Image 1 (cartoon, rainbow, N blue to C red):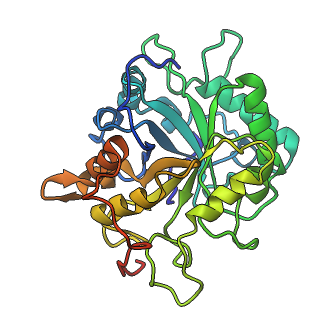
Image 2 (image 1 turned 120 degrees about the horizontal axis):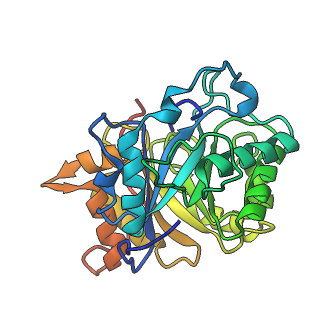
Length: 330
C-alpha cells in the first residue's frame, strides 16, 4: 500500500448487517480536500482504516514545532463520530510503504510499549492524566479510534510490534487489532510472520495484490501461481493466539493496478470462499478509488457490499477456480 502521511468507541448505529462477511476500506491516501471520511460511512462498510501513521517516535525527532497534520483535518475529526454512530469501526493503520521519510521501525520491545502508550493517549479514549496531543478531538468532543491495524512492509524484527499489540491488549483487552500482510508466505517475503504467529489479532486484511504469485489473478505469473486464501486460514490455525481471527480478501479497487479484478470477478471469488469458517470479508484499497470505480452506475464498493450482505445467489456462483484477468502491473 502507498504511504505518504507523516506520523501524525462508542458504536451507536448499525453498519450494514452482512450474511457472509464484512467490508474494510482504507481511507486517507487518494482523496482530495473535499473527500470526507463521512462520505463512505453510509456505504455498508464495517471498518474504515485511516492510513497511515508512518513514523515511529524514535525516528521522528522533536523540534519544538507543532506538526501541522496533528492539528489539521477538522472535517475528519467531525466525521469520526458520525461514522461511529453509523456502526462503523474506525481503525488507525500503522505502517504502509516503508522509506526513510516514512520510517516506522521500532527497535526495542520497550520502545514498542512506549509507542502503544503514545498512540493510546493520543488516539484512544480521553484520559485527564494524558498531557500529550489529542489530534482527533474537536470543539470539546473527545474522539477515539476503535482499534489499530498493522501494515508493516519491511522485513525486520517483529518482537517490538508484538510488544505493541500486547500493550494494547493490556490497555483494552477487547480492542480490535488487525494486520495487513502481503500475500506471499515464503519466509523471505512473509513480513509480520512472527507478529501474526504470536500476537492476538482479530483479523488479517491480506493484500492479494502487487504480488503476481499469490494475487487474485490466476495465470499472470510464471512462478507458482495460486490464490492462497486457504493457506492463510492454515496460518491462523497454527498461530498461538489468533485461531479465531478472520481472513479478509484484500483487493485493489481501480483498474490498471497490479492484481486488480473486476467487480463481477470479485463477487465470484467471494462466493468460492464465503463458507470458510475463517472468511472475514473483503478489504479494499482504497475507499476513494473503489467508490469512483463504477460500471453501469454501480461502484466497486456497492458490488462488494451486495455479495457480502446478500450472500451468493445461484446466479452469482461460478465454478471457476479463480479469475482470469491479465491486468499488468503499473
